[in-house]
Image (cartoon, rainbow, N blue to C red):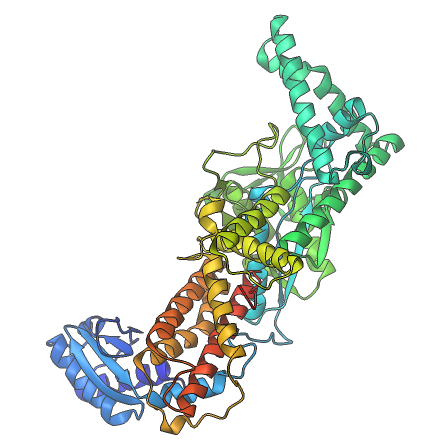
Length: 592
């Protein structure tokens, strides 16, 4: 039984013994900084079962705890709050158990537990990855790592949208205007080359629409009759019919794009355990529609289209098969989810990292899978996130006004270089070491700025603001880690500590208390699918360390025991920062 559980148990016992009443639960919270104490028992909720003055009730319970729990040193009551001060020995004993744990806070998965599959990225192969994809990738990767740390087995996956009219637009534009251009002949990454032709298609399409409008067509007619869109639709039909020339062109352009994507993923520091391709999954799900028709989950309309009636569930009717028998996205997603569980039989749940504009789609998807009778449907989660805006406004792929992911990664490193040079702290670094550090700081700034925000909130991303060595930023936390490493290089970490002779400084105690929150933060972050909880915990830990560093001498301690303890405490903070940042996919440099 840990201290929190002991306190809850004894408070309930006190209420029963003193007042003859039964408490269902006890509300505990950290004592506010302006009051003496470590843990606060909130008295007000008890007034439902215990009548009387809350201050007097608090005094009686406090005295009971003082007499019955060895770890309780003293107590005080402020209005309806019972503040309890805990003996130093309690914190020192716990610190002794965690200080040598390299994976402190992490839990290992149990063999009998089901795995979770996390889907993220899932790009279209008609354009390079952009800032919106970066948020998606960072969230999906971080949530995967947090779930792992919480004790879950995790598979990371994506579905690559490699077919459809949007792909044919790039293919057609390259065929018309490319003159055989390749990544090698142009010096462009494959995804950028193909993306340029997607933009080129849109320019030509708009031009042809305007020409038709000038000839007297309505805008709607012009959009349907523009020669370039008609030809793209014919190309899609050829692809679906397996036309050899069209399929060969599709394979060539997609091959360039995949190579480009892999380079971006590597630079961003994300990876996947499995890949699914829409070209292989778009027909999946049709067999389950047939089964669902038999069991009454779906119904057929007069035109032959198949639907699911979700009106009793507060939604509407949803089409799952067109009148001509072709699948829709929903059909594909049903089939892909079921196929994944077939491919990975230990999967018992899935997390879909997709923007918040798709919330309704996933509500429907999860409900249909549940109606089809799959037990794991209750463990499906849509990790919905808000868009990323820039000070200059919204991004648009077709118009080529997106912030390219590769360009942004390079820009972040360049900004880190400019700021680092201004600060002038890189004497003795080789050029290679400097470049690695700039990339680490730049990527750390980008990732932290995005992940510290609740996923559901929209972000206004400002690169300059993110690279700041002060405040709630990645570089500030990285700098604190590097500062601790500098302390450790000047000290001996292996010295034995006689904790029995120590009296904790207030700042040491606060730092240990902050460290003790880490396992709970990981579990909460996993439960809420929110890297922001880990990011902001790390910032709070770093603030607490810096306060300790400014108020307590580490290497100039009064005796060897104090020095050894403070060095060990600093090291445990550094390990926790590194572990927490690892969950966010952020590196921590040894020197800055």
